[in-house]
Length: 253
Image (tube, rainbow, N blue to C red; front, top):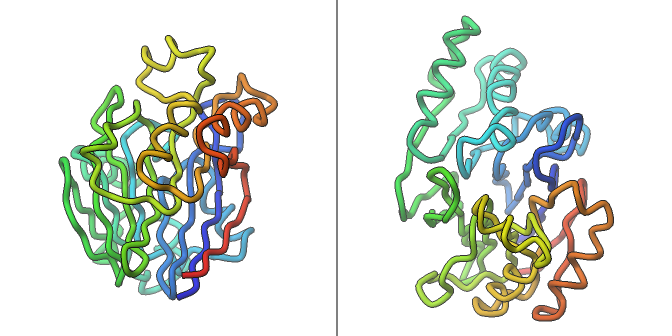
């Protein structure tokens, strides 16, 4: 099965930034979008993936940098395609209210093309042929991580925004791990205060869950040179990489 991972946005909130969190995971004919930061629809079009192919959006939590591109994405799909291709949106409680109150204010009705599934805690889902498991994370608001099964026991895990989880109770082996790495270990106290992870903590978790590749994600704009975080993470996990916008990974399964 041909699988690819395309980072559409990898940063943390920053005024004027075009690097808000969003990752496109294409496995076979299924395209999943992990989070939906501002500007995600033009990035999907510009990268050649398009809007109609998105089968599901997996939202981690209801902070603006992760969801402010979702309403425009749904509305544009509805305007361009009649009927609009079906779209599943998964996320924590409050997601449905956010979406439909926004739609109401915009005098827009997505009709039957949109299915919203709210999840609290751990749940196993089947989305257009993809096996998706949700994982409760440790952030300032209710937040979900996702483990996406790609056949056999191969998983792509997407864990942001969060403090590091206990690897013993995690339950998944992440062959490819995208993990919150907002801060360097030198800003550890800030990471604890805002419920994020350091690159060193992400590397420790990646090693514990047997990850082959670690991508440092949701990186604060204070680190203009992201190689600082790469060097930090590689102390514990040699195959650690600071994710950059439009970085693409092809997986051979």
